[in-house]
Length: 92
Image (tube, rainbow, N blue to C red; front, side, top):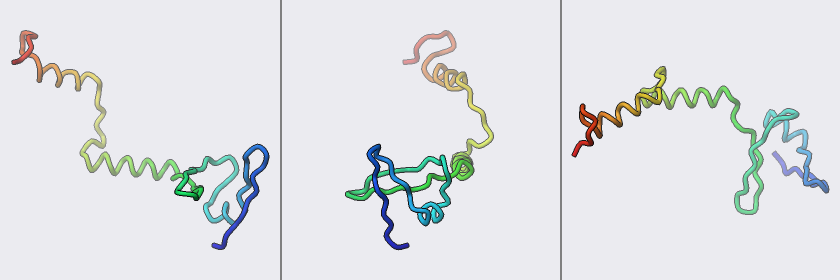
């Protein structure tokens, strides 16, 4: 894609050229990612929610936690069992 240009308004706004919007599949009201790399401003379309869900599921499956629902109590019970004996005294 060839170079494209936009003008910054007095309010700091720019209009993205139609070719850029089409190339990234952008639509009105969509949020964009903006970052600075050296002296370059990079604008990109963030991943859609479905791809984020798929990534989260893949990561959970890799860790063996997909389908489990942890509760706050489980962590507390493990902590207490590890540090205290059956009478509630701290383990040495």
